[in-house]
Length: 281
Image (cartoon, rainbow, N blue to C red; front, side, top):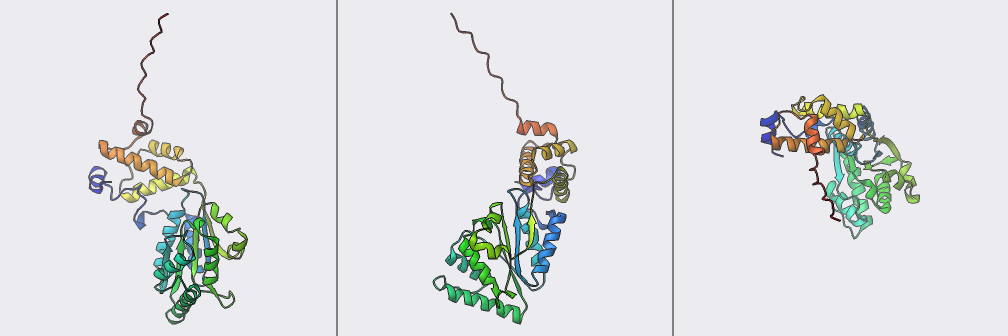
């Protein structure tokens, strides 16, 4: 979306409905704030944390806020696993890239030992605390999750060598009930369960997004109520509809987005069909 036109037309500093919002524009709810604080404490000892919920309920935003807060901590190294669906060899290769350890996929035990030694050295010498964030964790192979559990612990499970945050949809808690993953599931020490948002929560997000972008009055109160009513408790759907209205409004150069404009965009009038001619007998 043309940022210069957004600025000149409405005075917006950025698109308030873009998935790539700047850090200051993210809304940290009380639940997210408490979870982030809990993980910050967990980082001191290491262990597993879990974010789960259905699509559009705020998991990605929560993970992004958490990543920003953890990255600001002293001596904390935050890595993100980009391909959760990888098998063991690629999993080890990616871990090596993340934590700057040369791992050989053909020698899993050698890589396992090297990575553990790397972390031990960091903790002992510089007190760096590694954190691994995994989005879409419901796609992970049970064998890889088991590897991760074993990799993260030492001294007969008395010492945790890193902190792992798993994030995924409703399939993730079910995956952790897998027979081979029960030992991992019992090690989850902090949880955030995202749920469909209330009308008040959706309105708070919409107001926050517009205000942070620099145009709190871009939408009328009636339009904001209408968007919230049609979002069905889904943050992503709310932002998608807002982005669609913004794009149409920029094309037509409207001064303010209102409920009438919403109807023109989402419920355009259908052309009347021509009356049928009566068949001749």
